[in-house]
Image (cartoon, rainbow, N blue to C red; front, side, top):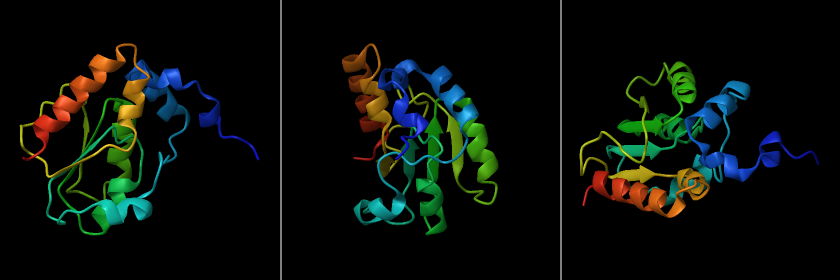
Length: 150
């Protein structure tokens, strides 16, 4: 079997920030599902369809699109790649209630206690590849804790 071009990339590049991801999404705009699909995860998503949901590091995953199509409406998707956010806005014109925002998950300009659920499918993995890994992960987890409702 032929490994995908993504398998050949150095994982250390994942932590290089938006420049790396912008280039990747320009070169390959097709949806890429990290780890698991919505059908694999839906039994673990234990919230009401009216829940306020934040998907961090959304990339071009189909996860929240499928959630939206099943009735979840209050979904904000964030990513630090302006390229992928533009692609996702264009791809989701028929899902007007879902938001796509260019945003750094380490410093989210979002209100505290605003979300019932935060979905991270692989963003923490990219932070594990960052130069300042321990500080980056602690900062990220503090931001997630801040925006989650308690």
